[in-house]
Length: 204
Image 1 (cartoon, rainbow, N blue to C red):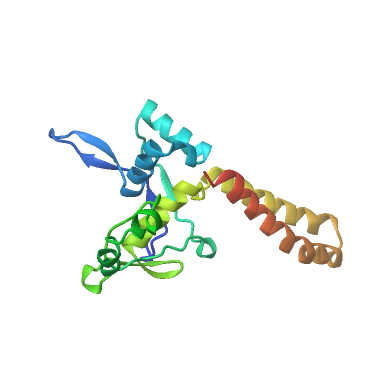
Image 2: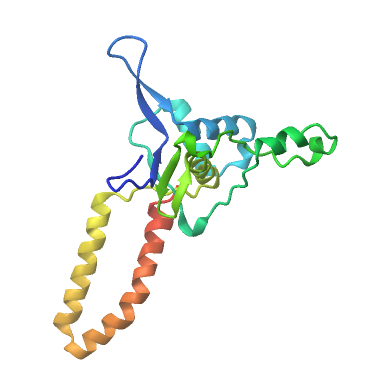
């Protein structure tokens, strides 16, 4: 998805699709989520427990709408090594390839990054290809490091609590004391609040 400013920040596990019959609506897996489910069939023990539970719940209860995630771009978390097709064609025949292939026991995405493909997107970290975005989504899922949207009600509660705290401090303390308390506590509590929100409420 491209947001209003043209930047890609999010993806979905499922999409609505028109069925074979007129008026019929089906839920289908997105490409990254289909890859994760295929990986689960092969190596379920290598996935985080919560991710396994999500897949098992989907098998049991069916696909659901609104399962949207934010791509985790924090600190260039994932680095993906691209290989040219010429390298694969030249290297796959020698005997060492069977034991030392760079693709051994890995998920491999095939695609192109050439300009004529028109598959370049703006992200919070700059321009990247659609293939890299797909890899980002897959790895976010496999590592259990994707990010949910925080519920709006919870965000409102956080904002109101912060406002009430600031007003209370300036109401019951002298101005100079309240000012120093603000200078000291705000830089400390803001990162802690963000850490709580993203580690306990927003990650899966």
